[in-house]
Image (cartoon, rainbow, N blue to C red):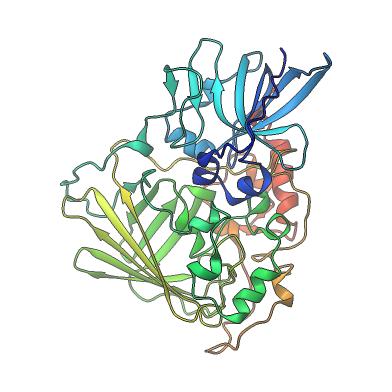
Length: 431
């Protein structure tokens, strides 16, 4: 099949920045739309980005392999799109944004199937070719259900596509952080030294810590365990523990911090400190060791909506506490799915560096040299982290690949862990 190579300069595809990772907006040019048609030769249906390869004939009659990338499996699930959508041997047409690197890589927003149906691959996107459309309905689009069943907060909650982003700068690189947040000089200096492609703390499937993980737009579940509550998050398969009695006295900071909860009426108030994650967001604002995060989860009257407010006190990097909010819906039948984040070879998420980041014993690569404000309290001890200890039941065969040993991550770098996992998870590839 012949590739159209159709470039529409000046056309801004909003879904790219509205639903994709910040790295996607940084790596793909939303001003240009390219159309291609070809046969699928490989499918990689895994988080954080679904990818497949198509064989295209160029203007010279030469066959060229294009890597096609799109949103996450978790997002597509909420749009009622499954792996059955595409298969090796299918002929498809795609439209999306080309790589800024100039290679044969495309971030796809629309996909036309052989049977004439069109899949809109970005939440809130629009069809391009037909009216027989997939991807415009599903749990992410549904209204909150009435939840008068006495389960209160203890259920699965979904982030509807209409909910505001907790950290919009994670998706929209046009946001001026200096105007959006009360930054100190130290925070401005950190941002001036930040390189998103090199310094992103979530490259190569590195899990987010608090408070950043709460921006995750996927299902989450509160589970009542008596003296503690577990908050099970789909993104990165993480579990937060909220202590409803005395929290641990160990001063060692950990990825998700140490959380203590209490009830104020029907609202759950959670205070978290001792956080080893050194980022407020994923685009360069640091988080000080002494940061305190206070969250309120408040049920609406009908029980089907959960309003969320988080206050982040980040002395030295914010001149005053920052308050953020979003909301969740209860949609019957939705469950917390497996995330199983896997690094694929090639594409915008390929591991190109194994430099240590925060969460590893060596600490962050660039933040080591940033101006650090004076701490307001004593030291919480060394920076130590065990991302694996927060993961729920690692994928069978996945434990060895990510370096699990007696519940601990080995000294293997995270990039090496997940590149290895991608190679060993052959069930993810269809050739």
